[in-house]
Image 1: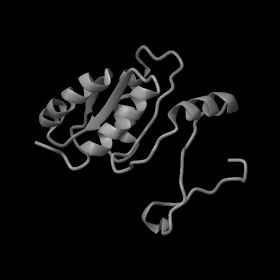
Image 2: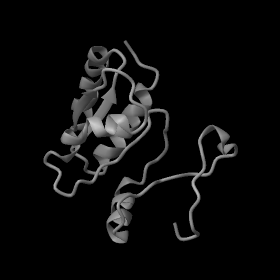
Image 3: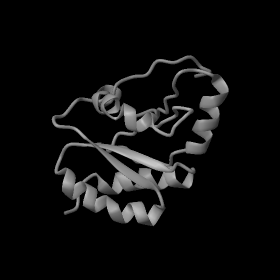
Length: 130
């Protein structure tokens, strides 16, 4: 079975693997067994460990991150992680984002882009320097 957002997820996994990321944790709740089986070939192709964090029920945007906290922090002394939505595809400047994040000393870093109609996505208000 092929999932509609699987090509997007695989693009993100590839970008992370190319940046040196060793493990991806996916929060899933829809047909987890089929999704995990579909991901096995990408795990081998990109040489990256793919772990699934299973939601019993949809938990919104931040819920799955909290659910996967132990997985995220395990063997991750810097506690650095990326969060992607599975409906977004672009060329992710992952290495540059890591460098920028480490340089500013803040708690988090967001990558955003301008869109013609933000009513579908929300708005980020920031200063000129980010």
